[in-house]
Image (cartoon, rainbow, N blue to C red; front, side, top):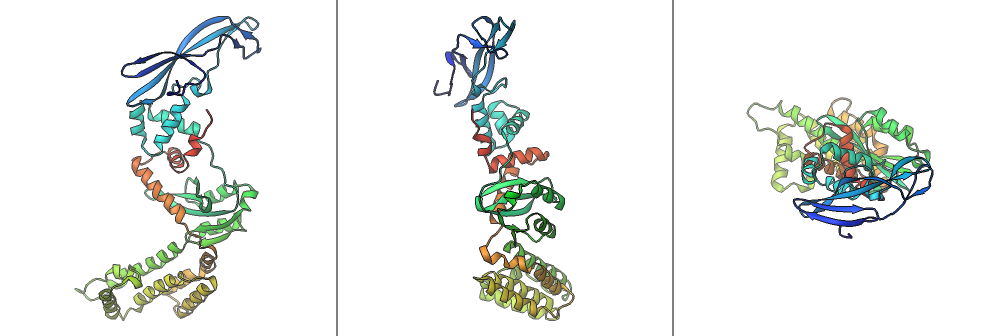
Length: 394
């Protein structure tokens, strides 16, 4: 009995064929009427309920529970005796099986789990919905990550995580500003006051919502997104300029421009110098590369004061550019300057939520994609926070 975790029942017989059948019954000889609370020993009738309980090797274990009905002489009505909580009421599976299935769904897809246990995918979804609950906001000081990821193609969803608590908090139904605003409006004021920093990418819609809903929190632009934006601007410059080169000349090697300057070999440095010389009529190319490397150099600073000095020096060197790609890069750095410099206080990044997004990609690949957003949220929440499904009392 301990092997199959049968609590509060008597095991009468075991049948082993292509499956294992455990015949059990409740040990009571009397039962209390749920309506008038009067005890009764008058047996009325009985029935057998079959429930899937667990797996033993490759065989499924079923429970055949004899459920009796007693007759209350005071109410003149029959009533059914209560079953132990782990028997899961009138469902055709027990709560231990729910835990087992929920745990396997965290690392497998619905098809494999359905085939293994003989449960339909619809039932598996019903189990997840019944056992899921809303993710609670952690206690203490909070440092949030806000970033979007792809649900299907260009259909983006916003993810919110508490980086310092290592807790994934929510997946929002879209990446609209109004949706993010509604989410933070649902937070209690006490939780909002505990948010110290929020790390985002370079999206003005996120910034305006955070200023409105979390005015006490410092907004930090993730340093990876800043460098990536400068690299994107450099790549756009390369694509335009190389089309203006002489016919038959070798195209500009984008890997030379994308690679970090300190990682270039002597041969690559010479090749890069030849590129800048060949396109000296277009100084924007070398200027964009210079800006990208100076931004990377700024992020190697130890203090905010030193980083601000380097950033101000870079912006002053770009002052005479009023139009073109260099002016666009200067405007971007100027607009996001205070949020870029906030990084040097605690060096907060979006690394945690980016790691969550990698796990989400793995879950989507393992599940062969999703067509229903609610099912998608259930599966991702289970993969990120399995204890919200598994740690329920029996």
